[in-house]
Image (cartoon, rainbow, N blue to C red; front, side, top):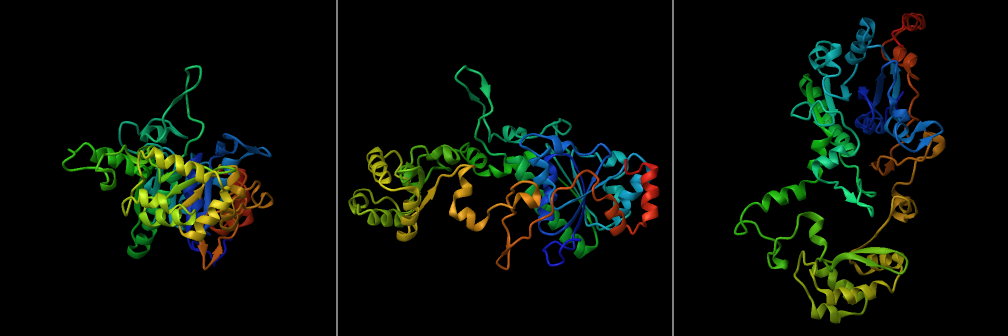
Length: 411
């Protein structure tokens, strides 16, 4: 049973998922929802996908399905379909995290399920969505980020094209997050109106949406310069979209410290002045005071050389302390490996321990009344909770559960 004090303790989700899109309901499980993952007798092969494999089980499964329950049902059988409908009758959400229409083909689509629960929110998350020319194409991983333009190929020293080594996984992570937000909005509306809804989202759409600033900038630049310009501090020159326009920045730039690198962000005049005063170089401010806002001293190589030497005089930690002390903008460059040593990370996040979840995992970074969320339960083995869910949710007796098992409905 979930903790009744958690934020979503009154929410029940029936999840039909394959691979990463199941992360939608991970957010709900982390906040106390009763998430029941319904697997086919063959199971979700997420447990064997990608690396690392921790004691025979993938990290992808251990993280994506933590806090959830797993049951197996043969949805090709009439009795399996009926049990699925019985679960939906006592749920708030059905999550179809796979190709759109997979449940409808089994007679378990929205039109079928709203007959047993008019308030059900039926949500589908897939790769390219349920419409458009790509709707039936198989895909996963970074396909959505190559589609949206976030990830570009690189060429190695031998001239072969390759996927870049360091890149975000945007669509596959943000798609579930956006879907979770939409689903909760649907649940609120359903509880107010008594009427559920069908919604669908795509990981590709989410990847594009998260890069809205660059995409919308490119669209804006299609208009004449008489209508769309750059920043006044840059003499209205139209910089490349997004962070590509930061290449020539000086007061907003990466600098080498004694033992690593820092990001300097004094594009506001007040922060720039505080920095110069703090390092005893008000001559730099007097020579290059800059504009009040968004002035990166673009292309000022003379100033850049001065700053390069100044930043080499302190360690990263010393620059962060300096930033806090004099009120100027400096941040560290971490890696995925070094982040765990960062004191801000250790204070705010840290890891759930291996003994709880099978490996160290990041918590959902939400604090309620000053307290972090409780640690979820370990991701279930296939069908681990079938008997418990049948008894707790559907009120089945031990004898009924045994009969169902003997009939093969659990696989």
